[in-house]
Amino acid sequence: MVVDDYSTRVVVVVVVTSLALALFGGVGAMLGGSCVRVSATRVLIGGWISMAVTYGLLKPLDSFTDRKMGKDD
Image (tube, rainbow, N blue to C red; front, side, top):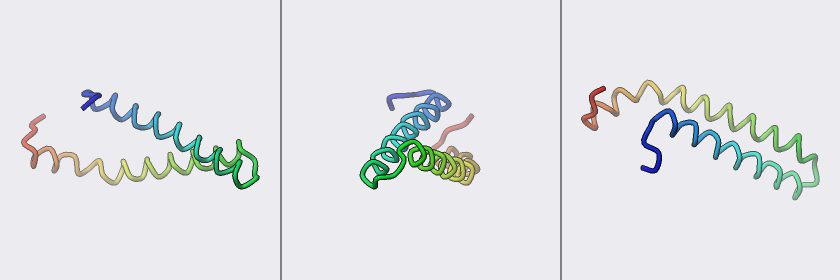
């Protein structure tokens, strides 16, 4: 794994994904002929919400996964 620390890995994923969401939201707005700033912001906020929901739903499964893989913390 490129980033070993769990907290750093989460931050890197959020930052890279946020940049990609804003970029694709802006490109979609340009192609569709709408306001780039509003569209990029809408896609970014929607992406943040979906990432937070997914993280919140899957976080409780960490202990199960760690036990199954033999990691004791």
